[in-house]
Amino acid sequence: MQPLRQRFTRFRLRSLLLMVCLVAMLLSLWSNKANRQRRAVNVIHDYGHVVYWHEFPYRDLHDLKPGEARLVDYSARPVGSILLRRLLGDDYFQTVRLVSFSPTDEVMNVLSDLPEVNHVDLDGFRLTDEGFRKLATVTDLEDLSIENATNLSSDSMSILEQFKNLKTLTIKHTPIDSRFIKFIANSKSLRQVYLYGTQLTKEDEKRLRDMLSHATVDVEEPTEYDGGKPTGKPAIAPYNSYGSSSKNMREKQRRVSGL
Image (cartoon, rainbow, N blue to C red):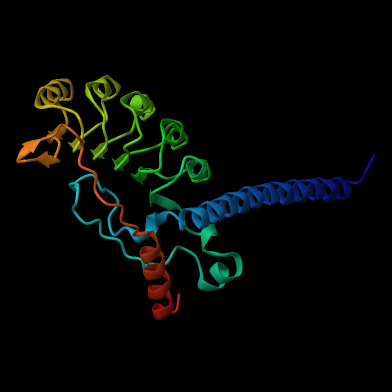
């Protein structure tokens, strides 16, 4: 029979090995998540920009109306010591919350590497139905804005039915019609719906108001005119690339503050 001390030593050794394996597994998951996010952000910076959770001065953005500025503090630093952030990289200590970009169908794949994103702004002039449906990988979407998506059909909006936490939906200068209504008619989470420069009519707006009595619904007629009369076509706003400026602003402010 083994002495009690020897058995206790073996027990402690097994526990230590188990703990080391567990820590190694957790570090591997943490590293994999950070590296996936880093790669995704690098791609997105060629098409737009991202905003991290810690850069919002407040958490709930749903009181903002379309066109109202979202306050973002690009100089805010992530949780974690400066030393560790310089050693490992900021992506180990910060999480992307908002993605705003003008992607191609292929670039939409990067959203699958950002599992905690819940706000997406799409300038969709390059998107087709196939690329737009890849938005389905954002499983906890709360705020979606789509504009200039002239190649999207109303049927592509069927993916909106799966977003059970969607609170704010803004669609601008995109040729959706009354077929779109059925895809959000049963939503219990929507608080605000803004539809500008689409092919929806005031009758469609009334139907939406009746179906979404718990939400703010605002529909505007098409804004393109010919001889003072509406043409019935959505007005297409010019594309404005704002991604690089936000990236540069973040880097500039961090250099100034020594972060």
